[in-house]
Image (cartoon, rainbow over all chains, first blue to last red; front, side, top):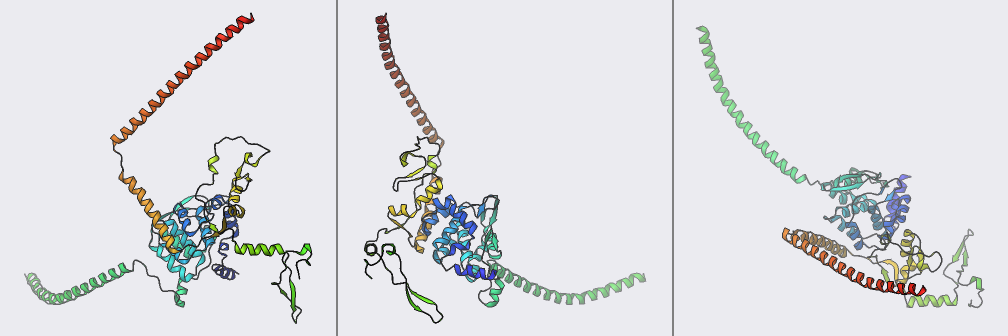
Length: 238
Length: 206
């Protein structure tokens, strides 16, 4: 059953019925709220940017009655107007406004296939900006961008929104659909490795020299010992 | 079939004609064969030639005016014109909304937007527009930041401004006092006259 539902949801992404990706209970709450009726009417992708710049926090609903937050309303609007992929990528790139890129991350996670979504969202593993987050109780918390990206990719449910199920990353890698992830630390690691190798080489050289020295020493030592031995002998004899 | 032959109750109603029957008895219907009223056909042709609502839907820029009415007093009529009754009144459509949410519903409705000349479709946007918009917002925010940084006021300027404000206040007070004095003087004259009249009347009565 679940798999069928997931397949349906993925089909919906290109079907013009994207709004149904979010469950009906939450959807109706959005349609009845004031922010949706007042501010979200007749928005295009351009005018939506104005509203998204003023976002305060990431969240879906809060309080006992489940009031929808502006973030959710704008997400629904994005699903409704269904902009081009390039526009969403432009949202992702916007470094000045972190809540716009968070919005785009959610949108990509909901609509696109895992093959495209994994590399798009994994950019934010190296992003440590703080985000304000509103929980379902209404309390606030501080996360970071990489936390949000990690939870979006690996969890099935975020703030009460059920996300379409993705295959695990390593399965896609085995099938050859995805390349293994390149982390930002890789260059540093390589640099470190080269440094370590150089050190090892130096150490090897040093050890070799030492060994040679030891060999020479051993002779001398033995010689000295021999002398000492003689001395001792001489001492004892005295 | 001519238009005259169609009975009135079937005019304008879609009529579907049976086309053929399958070997299993399943019927096929010819949907394209429709019967329309004469006037309806003319209307369709007219609509095709003169499209009415050509403007695309645009978002509201100014506020709706829900919060502006907080703390205001106004006389309300229970029965009478819609304009004078309590609630939100739309002058375009002559409609009254008693609730803020239903007021918003009315503003978003198809009829209201058609009267403004808009259809309910939104313009298509390209990537370049979005890029420009993002840059505009960035520049505007940086400008405000720069302006805030450029003008740290010195103490002398602030003192001058305060003194000017104080002087203006004093002038206002003086004006008010002079006006009051003048009013009082004129009133006193009137009262004196009145008192004289009263005295005269009382004297006459006696």
